[in-house]
Image 1 (cartoon, helix red, strand yellow):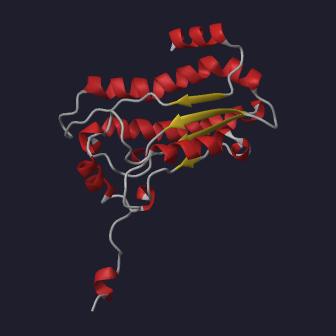
Image 2 (cartoon, helix red, strand yellow; image 1 turned 120 degrees about the vertical axis):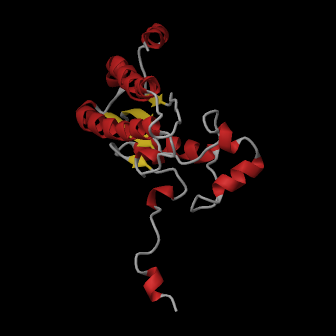
Image 3 (tube, one colour; image 1 turned 30 degrees about the vertical axis):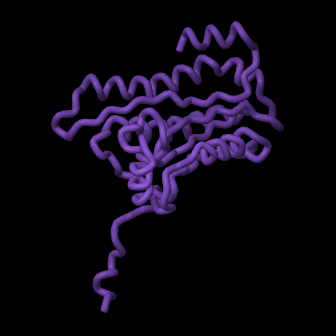
Length: 198
């Protein structure tokens, strides 16, 4: 974080958009999840995001104005909203924390004309999800578990970023955008469905 901040401030004295996208995960069964892995995930996904944003606040605030705020966009996860641990306990907990950090910073930075929002993606193709999205067949299988029937595409994230960082997003702060194909509204079966059948 310190090296990145030093390099950024060497190159520029303004910063209009900060996207906190660094993240890691770890998976292990409950009862076998190592403490070191938990701490590492929290360190990158929460402490890293917090300290980078904090360190860049002076130039974000300097670049901001009431008609064109500076933007901070944090990358959370649908796993931060829905109880989908799937063995990635520290990841899910860290992303719930990202969402809460986003809301707190949004409240505290609004007076400085800095918006803080987050994306909460579902399954996208990435290095982190390569174990399940490496080829088209795997992506189709994962997509079958998504209400909208597919995994996310690059343009799904790009469209959200264009909105949040463009004129349309200048009056929005503290939002968690669920870019998850509807996973965030999935629930159990219809409570009275069985009784009403037949």
